[in-house]
Amino acid sequence: MAETWDEVQLIADGFERVYVELEWYDGPRFGLADVDGRPHYFQNDDYSDADEAHEYRVWPADETAVKLEREQWAIYARWNQRYEAGTVTTESHPGHGGIDARYDELTLLLAPHRQAPDDARRLVGELRFDAGARYRVEGLDYWFRWRPNR
Image (cartoon, rainbow, N blue to C red):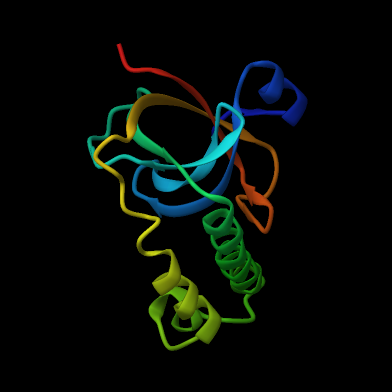
């Protein structure tokens, strides 16, 4: 189990919230998190298993995208709560398509926002975990502290 920190300490240490996870593979790869206090997409395509902080492309998410991302995340988080409780199976995962019409609609609406622009910043993200549930409607159990790539 990873070491955990409380929210007050995370904020004091300069870590910022992660609101949406779009991909996880041996660590966060793609999602929505605060960078300098404002929501940004983050994306990392380096699938090496290094235990170090990773470099991410980050780009601002506008208000509309943030609202839609959080709506879609809430659909997923509520499904995950039911899955963890054993009341649904993976066959009902909204990401499969054709399960939840609004989730599918949001996927289409969000597709253009999820494309990294050529001028995306490159930052290194250091990861820490809080003690809360992994997936929750308001976000995730991990936080990032960002710094420029050297």
